[in-house]
Length: 100
Image 1 (cartoon, rainbow, N blue to C red):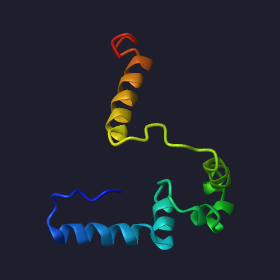
Image 2: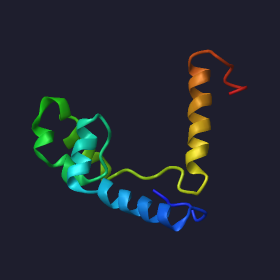
Image 3: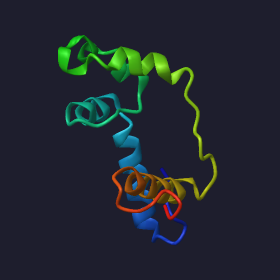
């Protein structure tokens, strides 16, 4: 998460307040229940992980020990979006692999 420098102070404060709320245990639980991937490890250790719907949580928590961010630089997210799009276009035959 980031708060752009060019935002008015009121929006910066609102963004920070949202971030603080979003990272709470309750918000992360609701986030997971809505189908998203939570960012708190205690969410993966909660009673949700014992439900068949969330049976993936223990494995995901274990995998986090070995995970690393591949594109660990400022432009990583846009690069990932473009790479993902082009690789998928090549995979479905929408364009050649060379062009992608």
